[in-house]
Length: 239
View 1 (cartoon, rainbow, N blue to C red):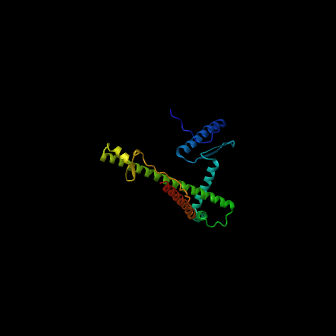
View 2: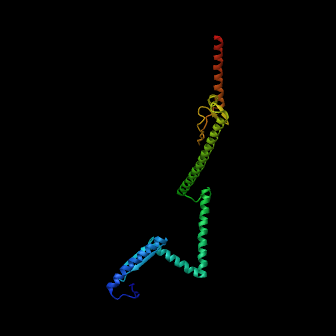
């Protein structure tokens, strides 16, 4: 037989009322938890028993759910009134305008402008932000250069291998040893003993070169000329 229909009204017996409250409370909280997990919903349940005992459940936190509820309810009430709706959008426009002004001010400070009102601590924070931004830009630039170098190495190795195969087809394997001895150059690539070694390009930092001053170079050249003259004189005298 099926379960009989329960009349929804207050249970007079205190014991039965307490048992029913305990069972249905657990079922309600379980359903609320399942709803928040299955549907990714923000759920909050607050229950007070007849004796004043509190039972609650919230998918995030009870305070967050209550604040969100109050804010949403206030916005709905304001939207129902045309005057309140105008004030609401005016307030939103003012907030967005202030945010835009702050972003423009930060941009000008990043460009080194309007720094007169900043203190030492503010300038240090701005400097740290610029250094972090510059470090990110340099890392991205180096990554792009390394990718380009790897692509050039790959293309260079393909061209080198194609030249080797082409030379084998034209001259045959017997002439490879003679070609290795002569170190034949084809398109800037040498067919020597290491003809199968691929070419690798590397990214290196520029090195500073020390150049002698004109007076120093002239002095060294003058000394070298005397040494050569003395050597030629001794060599002629020996002959």
